[in-house]
Image 1 (tube, rainbow, N blue to C red):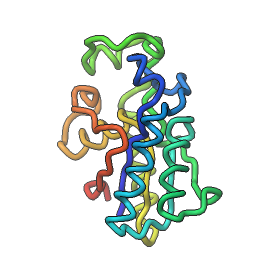
Image 2 (tube, rainbow, N blue to C red):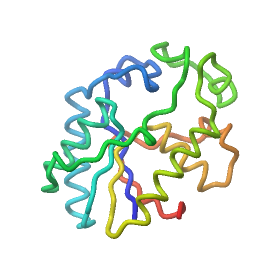
Image 3 (cartoon, one colour):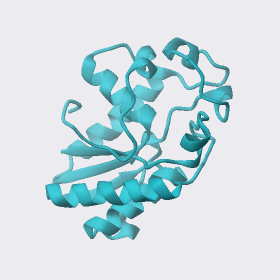
Image 4 (spheres, rainbow, N blue to C red):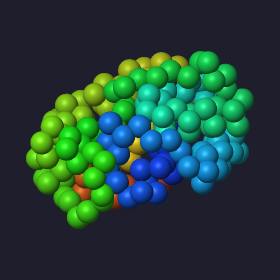
Length: 177
């Protein structure tokens, strides 16, 4: 089984800017606290996490390390896999949040193709679903949105219209096999 944790509150979240792949912001103090709380929740749920797979972005790495410490997982064993890095928002990266729908986001100059985004996430989930035991993914809001879009059977182009999962929330991913 795959479990998904969105990273804790980051500097970009606080500033209200699109982070994407290129804004490598760190967690703020509240984000570190959220990551620790996610670790406590995972420990209480007794999920038997065999591996932690994280995006390589700073905010996801910090979250993965905080969770690992709480659940007694060796930090040096965290796997970094850029197939679950955030969606590349192109020129919108670093700009203030504003009303933008999926079609506006994916048409931004330099934005990642949403089909490629979906495909890399699915490939990663499928690979780790084939391994024994439970896996914890530590990733981003856009990745969570795409996973929910897949669950709902919507077109990948519309992923950004899906509500975002809260920072440091824990979600089982049982619909991508």
